[in-house]
Amino acid sequence: MSFAISSQSYDQRDPNQNRDSYGVSQRLWDEALNHPAERFLSNCGKRVRAAIVNESYRVSGGHGDAPQQISDAIELLHAGSLIVDDIEDDSAERRGQPTLHREIGIPLALNTGNWMYFRSLEKLSEVTENPVATHKILTQVIRTVRRCHEGQALDLSAAVDLLDPSEIYPTAREISRLKTGGLTALSSWLGSIAAGACPVTQKALRRFGMNVGVCLQMYNDLNELRLFSEGERRYDDLRNARVTWPFAWASKKLTPSQMRALQQRMRHSFGDANELLAIAQQLLSLVGKRGYALIEAKLERELTLLGEHVDSTRSMRSALSKLRQSR
Picture 1 (spheres, rainbow, N blue to C red):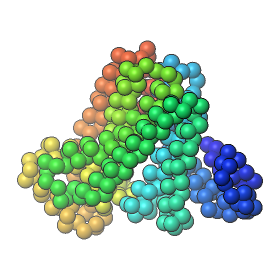
Picture 2 (picture 1 turned 135 degrees about the vertical axis):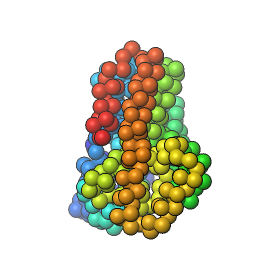
Picture 3 (picture 1 turned 60 degrees about the horizontal axis):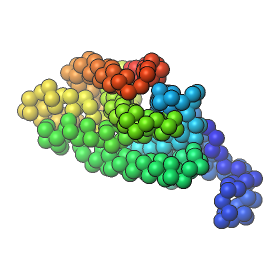
Picture 4 (picture 1 turned 180 degrees about the vertical axis):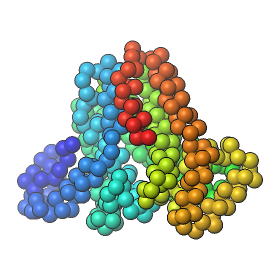
């Protein structure tokens, strides 16, 4: 992914840039931004969203991969959101490594995450020279990022142990649609746009991306519980009383009084790791197998529906195998 800032020619396309900045040492740019960004991006997982960009491009009639600017932009958006999420959750680790803000401090990490948002927009502005198409792309991206922040606000403020049981499922669904679903829908839509797909195909791929994104969140929520129960130390969702899918499914399976008892157990755990581990094991016993089966069924349904609008979903199915491997 090409994004590094150079001391020699920071941005030759910007005529208003202060050329005195060209004299800044490359070491300073690397320490301030390049190395933190590269370090985080190198640990960003399976790049499922970039794969969905490329597969959406292909099933829409494109040949090869989608324009690199789109894949880079999606990865930068996702990475930036993860950096900010880790700060807001006070997470200590991500994928077995210290979170960026624990390594370089909150101010520099927060700046790196925010810079990734704007660098993403800049990359998307380079996809086409058609100003109408560029405006359409940037408008949709800005709307998606705005809605991601609305979902994040809901995620941060709604504590699962304080909600009425009837509120848990719709809250989990809305958070997932606004955050993970929205970004994945953007990924599939951008791939279809780059290939020149018709409006019907664009709509079908956007819907597909939205629901695959919700499945991604379901997997993430379940996997955090499973890995915690197997000895991994990361349990941020439980520690922060987040409204996750295991609680949402439990709210549908348990009676209101049983659900309130589980919520009370959460509330009285006071963040104790052993008590939260017991809650994780209870949730997994209650909804774990059913949750994974539900996700698989949902993915199959979405692939079937997408198949009504494109010639083949074989390559898309292969891309989604990365999601299945995360289990």
